[in-house]
Length: 145
Image (cartoon, rainbow, N blue to C red):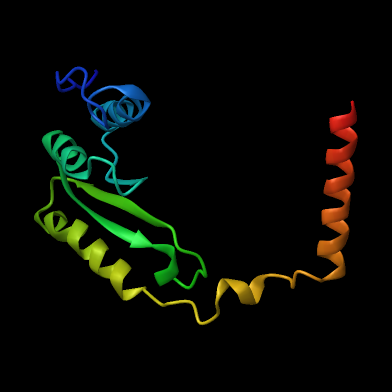
């Protein structure tokens, strides 16, 4: 069984055309056919989150999405992404699960206590100097060929 896609031809973004839309609707087809109890989707923050939630809600799921950033989870790097959490409708207790998941993620937040720079080697470290010299030699050799 395949999911009926919106007929908004020519509009960019998830749900309308293009690779992202095809990938998303393939996911919806999988959800329709296999009915997993829980679905988690990760994507760029600019994705059409409200539309994706509505499509997944339409096929029988309680759903919410949120933005999370790696720097809030003890990783010394910033990578903000959107996450959608959906639970198959059925038991009444399931309706609040997406919100509970978001709250649980917020409770897990713990900023990194060390900056990214603390993990990097100094620019004059002998290993860095050697790697740069090797790369420069390869580049010089490849431009001569």
